[in-house]
Image (cartoon, rainbow, N blue to C red):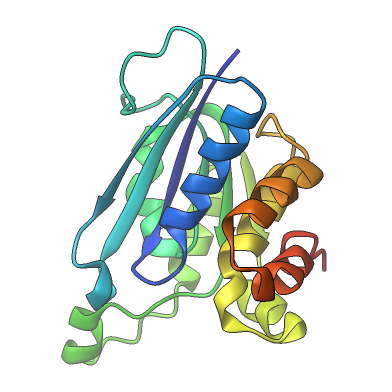
Length: 190
C-alpha cells in the first residue's frame, strides 16, 4: 500500500508539525515514509506545502501531478493551487476560512475564500469542508487548526491511521502543557 499526501496552507498554520506527526506515526507503525516541505516566506504568510509518501518502494518524497490520494488544505486558495496534484477520485479536506494574502490586502481585494470553496465543490468529487474558525473558537485556541484538520482527515479514512495512533505520536511530540488542548482539537467533530 502506498499513500501520497499533500498538506498545504500558509505560514503559521502548523503544516510542518502536521507533516511530522504523520511521518512519525508512519514510522511507529513500521510504514516506510519520506517527506519534503517547501517553506517559502512562511513567516510572512506565504505558501507552505509538504509532500508525504507512505508505503513500500518509494524512492523520492515528491510525487507527480495527479497522484495525491489526499490534499489537506489549511487555506482554500492554497488547496486550489495544489489541486493539479490530486488523483482522480482523491480526497480534499479543506478549511473554509481564508487567509488574506498580503498582495490582496495591499491592493484592496475582497478575497473571502468562498470562490475557492465553490471551485472545489464543482471540481472535486470527494471534498470535506471543515469550518476551522468555528472549531478553534469552540476549543478555545486559534493555534490548534492543524490538529483539527489532521483529525478530520484521519476520520475520513484516507490516512492509514486512527485518531488514537496520531494522538499517541502527538503526546510524544508536543510540550506536555499542550497535550490536552491538542487532543481535544484532534478529536473535534462538529
